[in-house]
Length: 503
Image 1 (cartoon, helix red, strand yellow):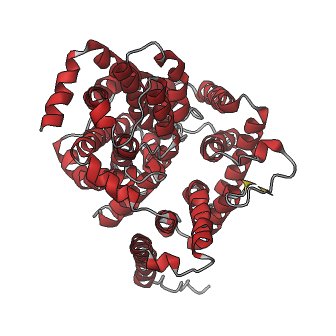
Image 2 (spheres, one colour; image 1 turned 60 degrees about the horizontal axis):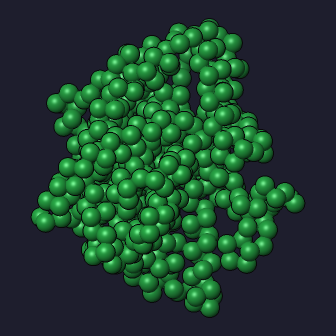
Image 3 (cartoon, rainbow, N blue to C red; image 1 turned 45 degrees about the vertical axis):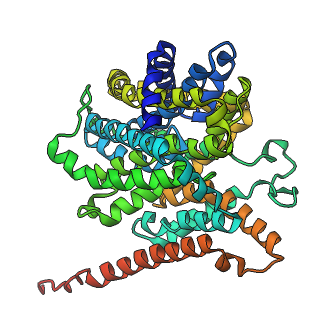
């Protein structure tokens, strides 16, 4: 209770409130730009924090993180382009609702769920910071490997009609994840002598190519004018009946997001995919998933917005940045001579309480700033398709180029777009490929580190209690999904033989 009161008292400082509002607005804009990740959005603000008060500077960066995690859902719904890695799961049903003329409703659900996820994550951050951080310390390399396997276990659910195509797509993603420097020996792998590939291929380039560039290629190949989908030019929030329907997936998403956020290295991508998978598993409307199910937006959005708050647990308590974004935030602390860790609450308690208060303002202002900015995005989508395609293409190219100011990045994105176009033609799912790409390094690096620690003894994955529990959970997910597919196949009615009239 004392922590809550001190956090509320910090709101008497107007600079903290302004920093939170500006950070959220900037974060939404950055997250909505394809190729501009939350960490890049935060890094662009970092030089401006040198002359700010420590509390306001930290709140500005943290609020930008919150806004960017939500902002990634805007292009995911409107132009089938996840603005952030974590928004990839929102693409599945969000874009389908947009195609049905329900962009305003889809954006309203994402905003509503994002605010609830942020508030839930903030409560967990304030009340359970130290206990959850102790759980995070229990994660060893075998446990991180098992966590990655658990994330990959949802591939069976995301594979569509053909699990073999889903596995092939996931294998492609895992193969791309091996490009670059070996995580154990430091040797070069599949770089073909190119220095641009030494650091590997960033997931955002592949994701933008697969989702956005392939969509432009499909539209360019479609010579039929077709009937345009006109979205409502205003946000439509869920009514009471819809809010009740979304309560369970939002709870699932926020809970998973809280757990994943406290695990350094897990991040919002795993949380959003797992939330989508579990919301589908427990939903009575599971057949609507992939066709524009509101639950398919609510669960991942609640998850990745909860992650944005709870990812600060290991950073504040132990000084461990679990992602690029929290690493930028760590830089903001160090700029002002503040070292996160066990002594942070004693030495710089005012900064921590100011951060809590600023995050509360950020979560609340997310609702109002989103309402102000999203109608503009919907209006842009309703412009003539050639205009929109040209704008999206320019946005994609400028966004990807701005990451490293490299033409090589553009070639990677374009190559991913061509591959995505072929996958669309052959009806291969995208999501397993993205999941394999994002989790590939986590799985491989921790698998090999575990073997180094154990002297090539594979039983280390079974003797580690956390690893064993996660592997058992992954097996339950895999065999459960396969069993459900088998039952659905056996229950599928056999078509009656055709008996034509004799001539």
